Length: 168
Picture 1 (cartoon, rainbow, N blue to C red):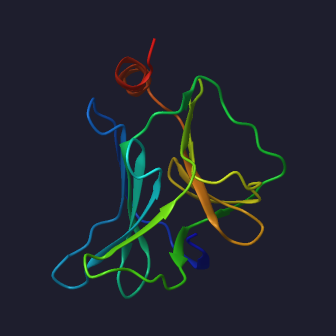
Picture 2 (cartoon, one colour):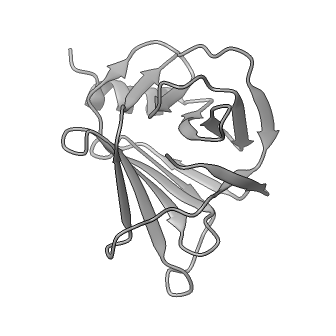
C-alpha cells in the first residue's frame, strides 16, 4: 500500500466526472518534462482499476483516476472518529517498473451519498483525513492510503455518476 510520509500545502484541485471515466482528480499543475509521474494502481486490475499518480522524485500526489469500477453502493460510508488536517500527501518511496507502474491487487468500492462520493481501496479503519478544497484523502492508523472522498457534489455530478455507473 501507499504510505504517507508527510503533508504539504494544499494546491488547486480539479475534479471531473464524465460518462467514460467515473472520476478524475488532478492536484495542482505540473510539467512532465521536469519530473515524471509514477502510477500506483489497485483494484482487481481487470474489471476494476484506480490509478494514483505521484511525482517521481518529490512523491507528491498528482492525480486520482477511476479507470474501471464495478462495486458501487448507493449510500454514504460512515467512519468513526477521523482526525482532519489540511494539506495533501507526500508518499514514502514505492518500487515501480520500467513503465512507471506499481500494481497491487486489492478491493475497490465506490459509495455515492446525497452530496458525497467516497472511494475506498482498503477495508482498514479510517483514522486520518487530509482535506484540500472538496477532496479528502483517507488514511488508516498506519498511514496507509485507503481512499478518498469528494464532497459537495452538484446535481449534475450526481446524475453523471448514477446514469453511467449504476447498474439497474
